[in-house]
Image (cartoon, rainbow, N blue to C red; front, side):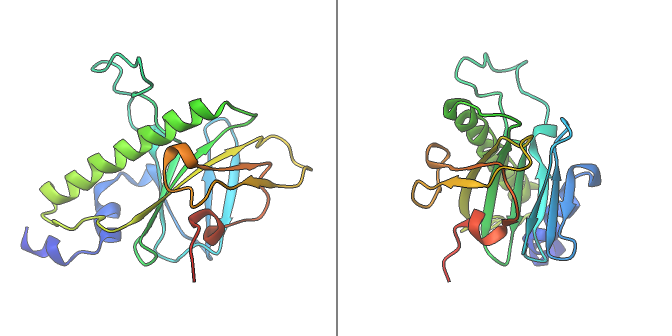
Length: 182
């Protein structure tokens, strides 16, 4: 257990998850593929960024009643240790009500909270994923190819309720999604 304290957060994430639910940066890009055959590419991605397919986690509907949407999860999270940011991303093929996307983003936030505790307890790294900023993104109208991308900003999009909504995404940049300030 002592060596785990010297592992980076990125090392622990790669050690923690099965390879089929994570994607790493390749040539400064991460490709996110949704089971409904939607695919987006995020450019200028930090070399240490890891995408985790959070909707691969089984829904906890055997334990929770799901009266508030607590069994939902967003499609992906992307974590960059060098940028100290976690992106929560929900992909929708068409327009979707904000309330539905908010519930999915909240569910992904809960998945990350669980992973943080797993890293602390089982990898013995008490500061695992500490001091990371959160960025919440809803990407809609993925099936529309020829429309210009639009983004509706509500401040820093640092909570599920104030997520960045992007329609018809083309040429997505990591820094825009992360609301990074230079």
